[in-house]
Image 1 (spheres, helix red, strand yellow):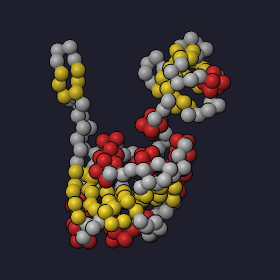
Image 2 (cartoon, rainbow, N blue to C red):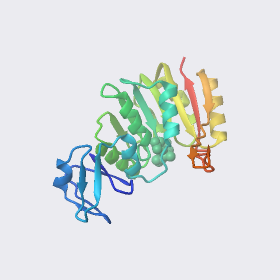
Image 3 (cartoon, rainbow, N blue to C red):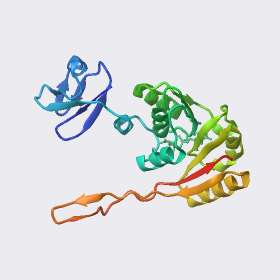
Image 4 (cartoon, rainbow, N blue to C red):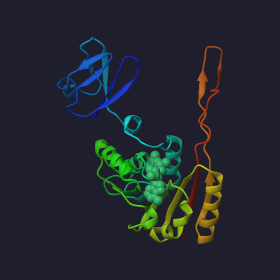
Length: 243
Ligand SMILES: C[S@@+](CC[C@H](N)C(=O)[O-])C[C@H]1O[C@@H](n2cnc3c(N)ncnc32)[C@H](O)[C@@H]1O
């Protein structure tokens, strides 16, 4: 994959052998394929494009999606709170377009593995295509209802982003390693509260519910202040660890 940045700062991620076309002109596939990261190439309308190496976030920004995806602030907290690392084994559901599954795959490396469950066939197909295009082989998309059972065991993390996640906490417990984490993304307080109660009853420890609010700063001539618009509520994250 290659990324090009136009004069307006808009980015495009392209596959090898792909020709580029926009209102700023056409760039032939061979010109793009032969260019190195850092080079500048010209379109037939003489506009300049910078060649960059796309990272996971560039790819997620442009990938196909049919439903909302998790925000970076929430993905970041899941990775940091659970201490996910190279070699970890993860189950994720539902996949959606695959945003957090891709991040898990990116972090667990070639010695780890991610199994991601998606109930809808059309969404599972999109996620498979996205993960294939990103070029990692350690993420397996399963077109299955996770409530029918978790096939894997010895897991370091089970991440659930679906309605009524607490219905399968008992099964999650059985599939986790001692010290492994359950993490839940819940848009509503009611879901988060019920998840807390069920996790507590099952004997999970270190149970916490966290909401992250993200607010940037505005740098102006007159002064610096918080932006008036912020990423407010997205969802609550519940974390619970198996004893
Ligand atoms: C909000 S999306 C997930 C977004 C995704 N986690 C991400 O990283 O952006 C919720 C997904 O869960 C799927 N889903 C709902 N219930 C499910 C179940 N029981 N098993 C598997 N997938 C399920 C839905 O089809 C939908 O694609």
